[in-house]
Image 1 (cartoon, rainbow, N blue to C red):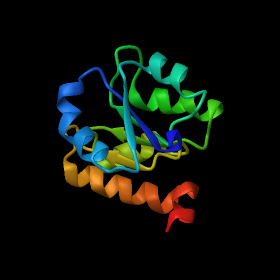
Image 2: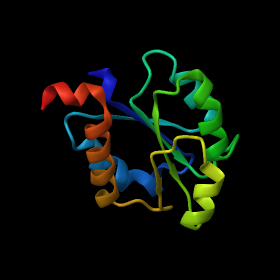
Image 3: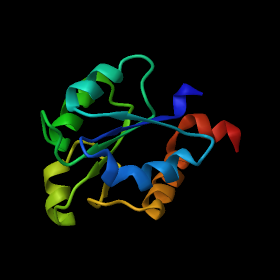
Length: 130
């Protein structure tokens, strides 16, 4: 269903291709791409994705700024941010934004599997399916 759509926001699709393919291989999820913060904000209204994976820097805003702007639109969307910041500094900068996880600049299929596992545990739609 469209409920399990994951939106990946990046201007560098090739760097995230392997990660995205690993997520798309799970039949319960659908992966879509957005190449800017504005494109994400336009895409999250109807129907909203389950999660948005945000690259550290987008052409029009940085990743955490996008998360900040998403919150008032739909606080129920899970977010993960791709960032090379040290974990502690990322934690400080993302505090209060409800970010599910920080992903490294080149996330692997293992990161994809871990993130999907967390989403399945968290998302109400998956509870019924168990």
